[in-house]
Length: 403
Image 1 (cartoon, rainbow, N blue to C red):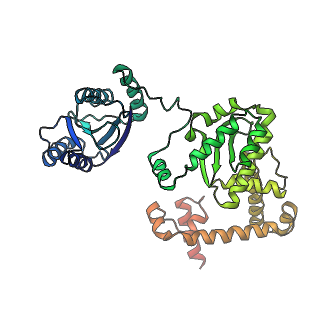
Image 2 (cartoon, rainbow, N blue to C red):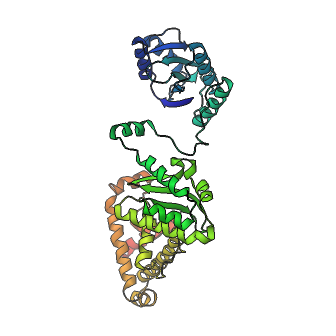
Image 3 (cartoon, rainbow, N blue to C red):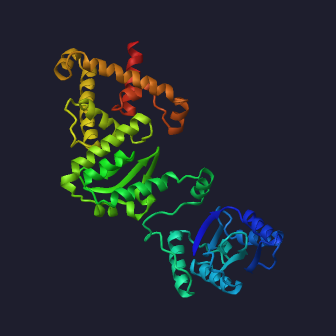
């Protein structure tokens, strides 16, 4: 048995859908807490309960319980199972309707519920998918139903409805399915790490490892046919925790091979514009071209993004100090020669001024923003913040006398 859950803002749409199925003879009502079974009366009762939580947007809960085709239970037993499911999910003081549908190849129920209780309480949706799956496994054992393997135990993720429909239209497997087949084929040979990477790349699969600066790997993802898949999205068999046990992997021995694979993947995605991690790409490109970091040191493989950022910050601080010294002394050229080589300090100051002008142009109304922030000091006050109000008045008076 499986369950598809939906939470939304409106009760009416799902209600009309199910009532229409009933009028067409494709569904029937098994149970309800409402006094009437027409749209107007049901929505009026829903409105009255909603008044207890007027600011709650997603108050509607809708789930379908799906049984295998050969598990055609009677209405009474299906109603009992549906009520057990709702009670275990916490909907024991809530408005609900249970419909049985006959418009599919497998028996299934539709459950419509108001998350707001009669007492104004609200059923939490925290971890509702995990809770739902646990309840389904419990009900399968309790009522001797066909047991479905849980998502945690599943080695491969099953096809989604959209993938199944696309496969019917194109008569071809989805990208995810093709990737699963290729990965399974490579993993079945239990290769060493380098072989694992090279064999995947030979099949057009880019591998990216979530590798820390210590060399520790905590995750893996795959790029195939222009799409990116995390290991866990393909199934437990393709998560790093499973993959590392299926191949011959040692952290220290394979550290460089994993790092090089990440660089190749970043470089390939940079060329196609498919990667969003610009920082990793730039590091890979600098390494290939033999460029240097901001403070003149060569960029080595051991320098990750964090180390690179630290070096850039230090270099930038040194340049700022040089620029400040150039602006506050009468011998700016001499300081520039000592600290930055020739005219670098002067050029740096000019660049900062140019950037500041561009930044000023980007603010729509600086005066208006200043008013909002309460800035009401004159320019002369801001230039000499150490003066007290009394000393400032004396200075103004003195200036008036001298004039």
